[in-house]
Amino acid sequence: MRRLIYIVMLLLIFLVEGKSQQSPVYSQYMLNGFLLNPAVAGAEGYAAANLTVREQWIGLTDGPATYALSFQTRLMQESHISRSKSVRRRGKSASRGGRVGLGGYIYNHRNGAVNRTGIKLTYAYHIDLKSAQLSFGLSMVGTQYKLDDSRIKLEIPDDNLWSGVHQAVFIPDADFGVYLSNPDFWVGASVDQLLESAVKFGDQGYETMILERNYNLLGGYDFMVNRDLTLSPSAYIKVAESGAMQVDISGKCYFKQDFWGGLTYRTGHSIVILAGVRVDRLVFGYAFDIGLSGLMKHTYGTHEFTFVARFGDVASRHRWLNRY
Image (cartoon, rainbow, N blue to C red; front, side):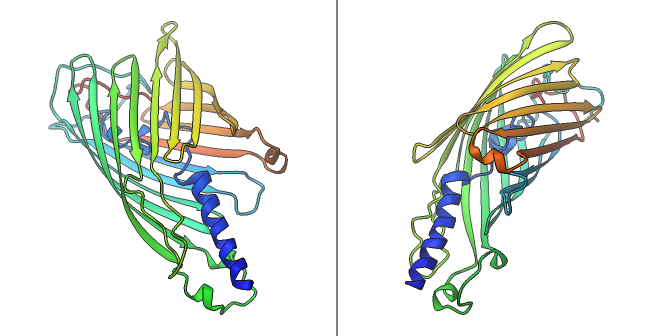
């Protein structure tokens, strides 16, 4: 009976992790679409580094937390230092050179006793359609799943069942994406966890923890009200292979291209308050998730901070620049 209890406990940890957040959740996907779609790597036309820190359900012990660091660039014949380019508007150039984009992405996601660390290496190819840009991207992914002993308390520490559990496993995988953009709109589709690998911690059992595919669809449109004010509605739809769906519907307002605020409604989960500012080549974004369930009574919400630095700008050679 004791062994059965341990098995049920472990399965609950893995299944809750699998059903709720098999892949990290980001509220500020507009600031760095590369985190969700490999085809965005290099689509902006300049090198950019992004740091995201997300602390979920502040106030609850062992609440989920995500830390992500990414870098992306476009391989061009020349490079120019980014100076006063707009935080979000894309420029135009007659050049068709530099079609290859490269990117890297490393993250750590903690959820209770399960700690997941992943790394992605991305190759993207961009095609100039004269009135738009079409991009394709492929990522090779490696993820380590690890159990934190300090968060698992056993009645008998040397139990034979626990001794047969592999406390760290490494899973290879791949992501694929397509991205289309022009000066007024952007839309992309991607699939992650293409191989649908199985995570098996023990020598027996646990085959039910499958990393199912997730299908992501993102898009947005720009409405210029006047010279200083722009409205930018966007949407993010995530569908798991099992049929589970999450939809983010967002609206942001940009003032003089350097300040913005907005709201996001996430189906069945929360309302997100968005705000940000650009200072020269640096971008700072903040999101506060307000839960819609009874859990909000016991937490201080979810906080997400994003920092972006642009190191170079090839706007004079590249047709489109992705918004921030």
